[in-house]
Length: 444
Image (cartoon, rainbow, N blue to C red; front, side, top):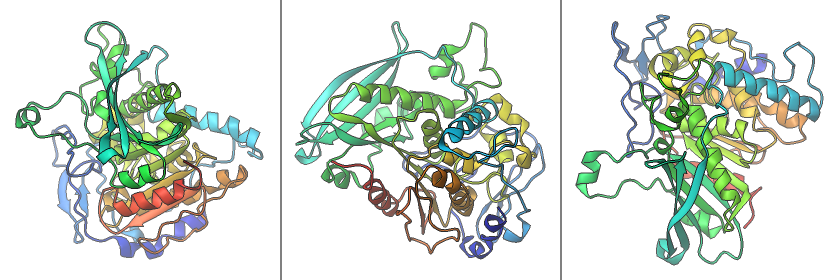
């Protein structure tokens, strides 16, 4: 890992001014996330450094955000290709067993396991438009009822497939910000809510593929003190206030919802359920990686700007840290995650492992120059460090160990990367690069 530790020296030039708001990296501006909970005691928002990078105080540890490469302490990543007892992983069969160990660590210590009593989802097509998008697509509204009984919670899925498709087609599933009860102000305005469609929707359909969108809060609310709601609430015993310490936070709940959508796709004659790619941005980029680790039916992953506890290395002290996430977004993780503030280097996992859990399936990672809070260089290094698993399984890694020039997509391998000029968003250029990357695997 020495090469990885020192390959970032030239990357400091990319620590340019940012326009990131407080807290965890945020979703695109048109769909603002819920505000983080108020933190009592010391002021946690310390403003910004000379380059505009946000400075945050972690109350429990006293850590303040770092953006100076010279202050990134040396670190050693957990071994991907060694079992817990220290013996080497030498074959694909060995990796299957090692992979199971890593998944269990993430379930227990980071995201939380999905309880066996999670409810079933029943799906029904409620609306169909055969001439959507100026006649280019068949659009269907599909509703999934979570659990049974009156007033069941609903997952609202919208599916677009090419209007003239001769058979089942590959689909890109976008888990988007939104969903949940419509805010009263938005309902009163009469204006349509953001659709969350990709900026390359026409290009997707032109390739003979489809795409689908879902609002993540249909599955589980994204704020503190809501474990009694959503799918998590349906699994709590009477009087229980929150899941057990090793059970799911919201990222695992959203991942559970992705799997239930894959269940629906398996019965949809217009969708090739063996060719479903998953997209998520920011905290939903974390979700995309974890959902793929849990459900190998996901054929490819596009994780956009997922940052800390997503694709960025936690051991690399840059921007948002484990301390920040545990303080400001505790509900997204298992209760056991609270053991790790100030102890990043002792965690049994790191982001290269999360990425590698999708191997040999393709994974595409992106970051932005003005999104240093999410540590795009750390995302790149984690993608490089996941490479040995891909090589072990006979696939191609990223192909480089040094950060490539900006706005230069890497799409030749089974790991893909794009460092875009700009902020915390999935740009059109990111999407175009992803379609090129995915085109090696998906056919119309």
